[in-house]
Length: 163
Image (cartoon, rainbow, N blue to C red; front, side):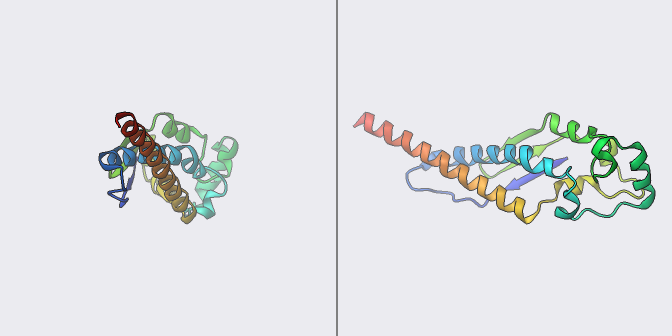
């Protein structure tokens, strides 16, 4: 399962020069970590059905789920035993560049396989709500500002030390 986030972020900010690509890369990395720790988890909650417009499950699948499911897996859409969530969250790989970020997560075969009566679970987990878009954008912007300010302080300190 692959999640990608691309950028149309400012290319130049006064005084930062060559530091800007590194700042953008670090900001993308922080934003990806934010997505994993906050937004990814929301896809496995009871509220996910409304927030992410999950496709309805068929009656036979829901009946099986009530008998086979463990804990919240008896009622929540993308949870049966909680194994797929734990499996995907175990070791996500983040690859950030100055123009975007890719998050790779291993999903169990049953999560990726389309079975009759079950929707595309991978597509449901990758879906982003308007609130999520806002939170991701805010996290990315805040990270760029914070890291940019830190870089400007370092540049100013170096110039002051030379002069």
